[in-house]
Length: 102
Image 1: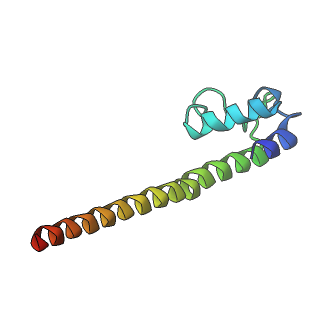
Image 2: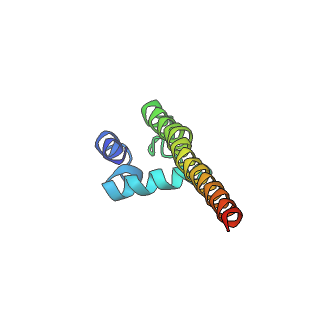
């Protein structure tokens, strides 16, 4: 996403998309929802008109990151929790059998 933003929008909005680092920072702040109140990157800096290509890019990025990547992270955490719970149940069952055999 950073490379695409830099390549497509560096001439239009150098402050937000001029370099890879600036684009990364812009996207990072957008994910934290801190960029929306004072410096909207989809507004044209000259006449404050809406640049719909940047708007679509930012919306797609936020939706992708929140809905898809967040779900993947939650699925991994849930799988680890279930595995740990099954291991604990197996360990408890083994301890119970060991106590009975003594």
